[in-house]
Image (cartoon, rainbow, N blue to C red; front, side):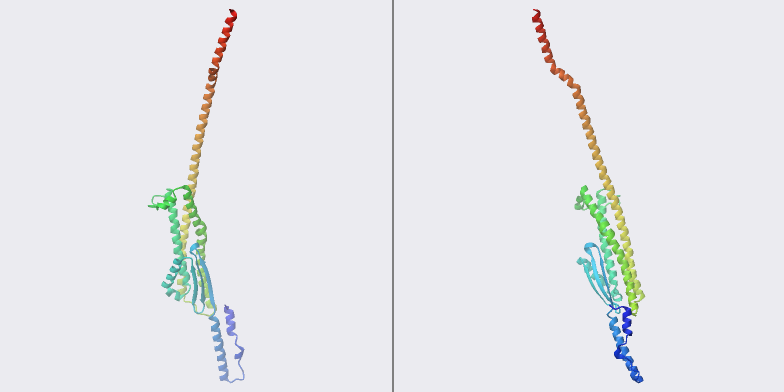
Length: 322
């Protein structure tokens, strides 16, 4: 790719084979100058027509990435694009958008970026609705939502999945990872950067066209393209706000759940302590009863021997007296 400065230098660099001979007459002199200018103009057009700009971008959502490389010719606006998607549905959707908006692509090739940006917005909205459904299910199962916010009914398998504490926390963790790690940070940040990138590409393309001496694109076309980017970016701001709202709701839900489980564990520990205290009192009672009745038991055991000894001594005394 030649820069504008190099292109202009090559244009004004008159070929040596067309050097002007001062000894020629006026007619020959004019003919030679005209031939030289025509040659350099043709060579200049050949050079400037090879000037192009390449654009490479990638937009997530993880398993539904969109990658594309665009090659735009500056002087004509012709564009060749290689676009790949992980899912066939996304590719079909983008192809349909290009077919429906082909009149916009004829005015400016960067409308393709607008189509991709808008399609990604709808993909992110679908993902947001899925996360909202998961958070609402958690709130309904744990009875931590207002009556107006509760889901009217739950699918049986979802209700069964959230029937135990372990399953509930597993679902909480999965939703939290989706909100914070996968999309709350990376995808939303990529969306904002892509909106800024699209606007910068439009401005850069126009600067390159002007530097090469081409006629600039109509201002109305540029304004419409920029407004399409701004409109999608504004809609994405609402998505970001909703993601933040879901983060706060899920964080509060997790805190309450952990506190309830900790309180439940404390109640269990308190019940165990009460049982241990009762067992301790029972053991103490048994010990007291044992200490109370043990001496009489010993007396009862030793009393026959004592009586026998007394009778034996009495008989011995009587025999000695007689």
